[in-house]
Image (cartoon, rainbow, N blue to C red):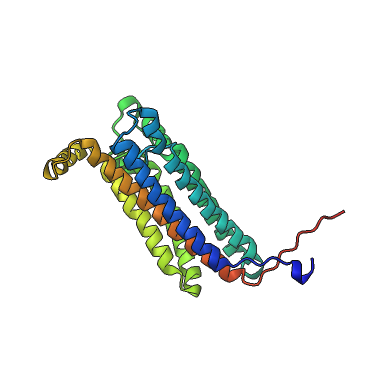
Length: 261
């Protein structure tokens, strides 16, 4: 390929396009959720579920899942591009980060953590035997079962990856993306934890009465929408940070595609 035939990708331009596109989609998804769920203009449950941000296997969760998986793919691309110039251990951590985000994306759409958490709780508490130790403490979890059995695993790997990314992102002054993105994730999971508490309906009722909200569904659903939107926005920030990192390490990179005979 001659110099005139070479294609140049302006990473900064495309990062701006990706950011604006992701934010626009999230705004449109919130509007669609409001129109089809709060207003219920079609009075049809199946139509509501398509746009329901609070439900899995809907268009909003599909978008959230794809966005997180693209974040994982970006981390794998960084491992591929930066691999020759960094240690094997760092390359492995980048690959681990990519696989972690890919799993989170798949899990987000398929409800794997909720289902696995329920299964593990049933196994741990079968025969109604009163258990002590760590398992006994986990079974006393007042919220969803996945917070006791799956969340600690996510938290551990998240902390390992965060520590590694902190040192890597600091080179290019990208730590704000990391802190704000993961911060949104942490707050969203905190909201999710409160939604699973036994007395949460009493809290929803008080909010409903205080603000004269017609249906309690409006309170419960709004809480879930805030949680999911925070998670999506956090993923967007992380992805933009990863793309900026990729742009820095791949600056000037030339890729030549050849057909070997």
